[in-house]
Length: 257
Image 1 (tube, rainbow, N blue to C red):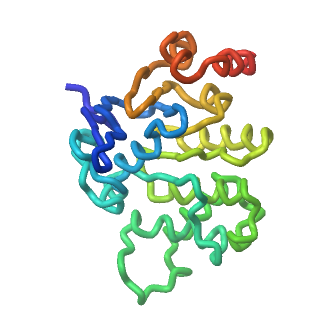
Image 2: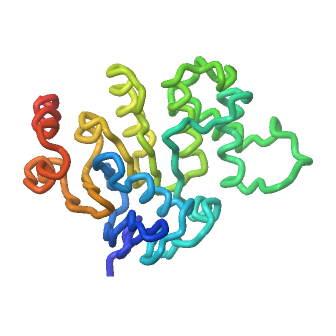
């Protein structure tokens, strides 16, 4: 039996009498980069919240490397190897870039709730944080407070925090929202670089990003996955075009040539 990095089985979520997620089945292989797309209100953010533990499913299963995680707290899910970012940048504004990243590595290196250690003496944590500073391209901003970074730099820092704990499955919620074309192009390259060897799920509205980043695309409409396939197959899927993409498929395809 195949064990997937992430697997959703007949996943459902109701808010009162309203069914938002309606029987989603999705199996993501280790190392795949999957973009989740769909119109506003399709249930994409709810799906992310169910996977990461911020919401509890009404029914169905979420499995991480074969282990059920539905119903677990977000921190429990994180410690099992799944990490996520959010639509709104979530960093420590009054800490430097380096300090933000060092905070992100502490738990994974075995440093728990101890207030007697001097962080400057934690050589392994400091070395890992320095490595992350380089990975996300913020060497020149190492000692700058996060609040003083540009928007794109803050998003890059958040990516660094997201991967800091060594999670094998990464969820990114609209990582390029609000960026210029130049920033977006740089960010696609950054995401590809820092998620090498990891499994990636991203919610994204920019179809250029989707087709430039994803190995597979899951199309969510009214709480259901109506297609899950390669970008080429999704482009050619008449049901997808009718339900959501329309001319944007052709536009994205043309942009890639």
